[in-house]
Image (cartoon, rainbow, N blue to C red; front, side):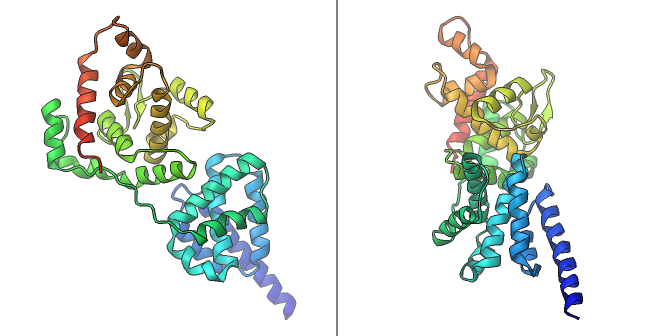
Length: 302
C-alpha cells in the first residue's frame, strides 16, 4: 500500500512539475499560475532541486529569467510559510527578484539554494510596490500632436495607443531591477511616434515598434551584452527594453547634449546629427517635426 502511494505521489509530482516547466516555456508566462501550481507538488525538495538544475543548464536568457522567477516563487511559496501570503500578493517583487537571481548567475556561474534564499528573503523582508508612471493618451494630446503634424493621431485610435502600457511598464521594471534608469514615458512616446503602436516594416526597411534594422540591433547586443532579435522588435515589452538601451547608447555620443539631440539622432542617424552639428547639413522637416512631437508629449509626462 505504501509503495503504491509513493508511486502515485511521484506520478502526481511529475505531472505538476511538467505543468510548471510548460508555464516557464509559455510566451504568456504567468507568476500567478506558477504560484497556483507549486502547493500541489508533494516532494517539493526534489522538484526544487530539479528546477535549480534546469536553471543552471539553461543558456537562453529569457527562459533562464523565467526559471529564475519560478525559483523565487517556489522558494517563498513552498518553503517559507511566513512569506506564503506575501508571495501570493507581490508578483512584481517576485519577478524583480527572479531577474536579480539571473544576474547573479551571470556573474558567479551556477547558483545554489543559498543564493536563491538570499535574494528571495531580501525581497520578502523589504517588499516595495513600485508604481512607474506612464503618459496617458487623451484628446488634448491628440489635438496638440495634430497641430504639429496634421492628422498624425486619431481620437478613434486611443485604445490602440494605450494597449501596450502594461508591456512597457513591465519592461521598465525589468530594466530597473538590473540597475537601469528607464523612462516609460519617453519609451512609449518613441513607440507612439514611430508606428502609432502598430509595428510594421516601412518602405526603407526599418522594422517593429522601434523602427530599426538588424545592424543596429547587433550593435546594441554587442555593446550591452543583450540578446535582442528582429522578432523581438514586434514584441512591445522587448521593444521597450531595446529602445531604452538604444537611446542610452545615443546619449553617450559627443554630439548629443540634450533630449532634442538624442531624438534627432534616433530619427535621422548619428552620422547625420554630427554633420548637422558641424554645419554640413540642414535639419530635415521630418526630424524637426519629430522633436516637436516629443516636446508636446513631454509636457504630459506623468
